[in-house]
Length: 311
Ligand code: PMT
Image (cartoon, rainbow, N blue to C red; front, side, top):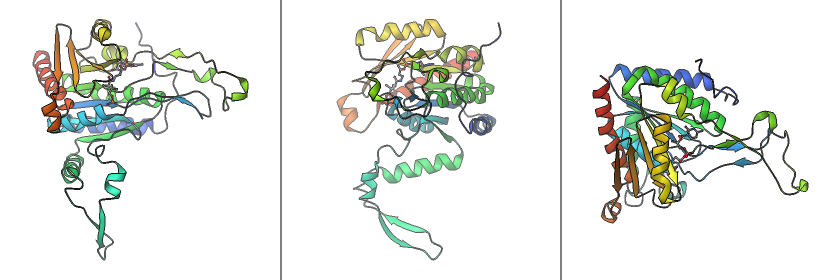
């Protein structure tokens, strides 16, 4: 049966063609080095309610899961394509909000060529120098590429392009779909052009369901890749069933199940025949260990086994 283009009805973001080329070059370069590549999606999507949008439907995701996981995947030797919501948590930078460095970094002079020197007390900004070093090493090695999305439409087009860029890598590509993607949207043809007026009284909107992109991703866009989706719930009693349901429906490899309140310290890695609980102890938290290190370690081993099986 001919493949239906689920993304085509969403407006294509400016720059999508250029980004598709950049992603394809990035993936091909790392593939030629024999490096595994992971696409991380991170942060929430924004859905406009008006054609000239003033109001949006958004969600809670901070992007911290994606950003911290990107650091762990780079440390594990992966190339990382980081598809993230603009202004959400960014790898190596998210632990240092502007108020921390604005009050700590001090200009200490400028050279005749105009280069500015900055100094800071390492104790006032712990981890900053190491984060900077690790970021710059990844940038210099060409193992990290960050691309931003804001709206649902941006996300869907960029995800499709990223999947097409990674598809030639076969089983050595991993998809780590941690973004919280809107399930609902207002089609362009049904959107009011101008700002919705409050003088019209209480607002009633009917939103359409967003098609699940896992389906074309697994079947058509990157059928040989190792694919991990996430499942977030607020009710712990249903999360495993929901994760299993996703595995049965889309036939991908792993679901990482998590609960809103405990997501920083507890997840369950669900596959078709296993459930593995990953828990961060208080001691580990005090040492600054993050749950993403455990998630990435676990998934890296599963990815290795998957690649061996496919080769
Ligand atoms: O960002 P943080 O604050 O650190 O929080 C991290 C997180 C809680 C957002 C993350 O760990 C997480 O669970 N992300 C997925 C949230 C979720 O349950 O989304 P969902 O039920 O809408 O989608 C489930 C899966 O289907 C996701 O992997 C998503 O990529 C995929 N999906 C969703 C919608 C859609 N139209 N197509 C999809 O393929």
